[in-house]
Image (cartoon, rainbow, N blue to C red; front, side, top):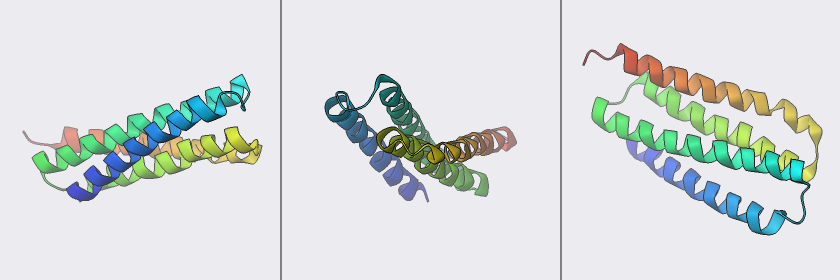
Length: 125
C-alpha cells in the first residue's frame, strides 16, 4: 500500500499543478472572479491532500501498514475526487447541483485526517 499511496500522491500532486496552471493561463479570462476563486479553492485542497497522501505513504514505511492508515489514504483520495473535482466542474460548467457533492468530499477529508490522528494517538512509541 505504501507504494500505491506514494504513486497516487505524486500523480495527484502533479495533476494539481497541471490543473492550477490550466486555470491560471486558460481560464483566467473565461471565468468570472467568483468562479475562478472556486476553481482555485479546488486546486488548493487538491494539493494539500495530495501531500497528505504522500505523508501517509511515508508513515506506512515507518510505522507499518494498518487499517487506519489505509482508510486515511483512501479517504483523502476520495475527498480530492469529490471535493476538488466537484469544484472544478462547478466553476467551469455552472451546474449548481454539483455543489451538493462538495461537502461529501469535505467529510472524506475530515474522516481521513481523523483516521490518521487516531492511528498516531494509538501508537505505543
